[in-house]
Amino acid sequence: MQELDIVEKLAEKLAYLREKLKKRGFNILNSVTAVVPVIVGEVYKLTSLSKELLDEMNIFFLLFPQSVPDKS
Image 1 (cartoon, helix red, strand yellow):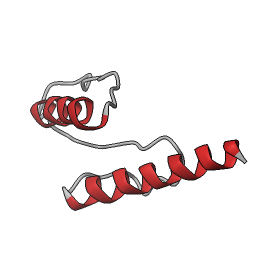
Image 2 (cartoon, one colour):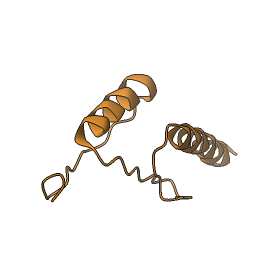
Image 3 (cartoon, rainbow, N blue to C red):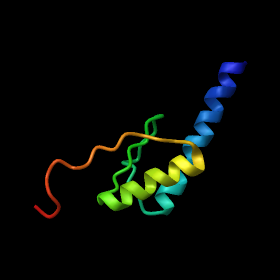
Image 4 (tube, rainbow, N blue to C red):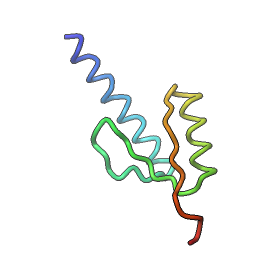
């Protein structure tokens, strides 16, 4: 079935993404869904990760910076 192939491919890509993010030390909250939250913590790291994902994996997402100043 074509639909099953799509689901399996998505699962493989998500597993790969989770593995790489964990190896790089990112907190992904042990997500098992198609949405992978990534807790980065610092704006410059978030910007760098966003660019890398867009360049290498054609993934992009909106960035929502924290609503309070650093170290407050």
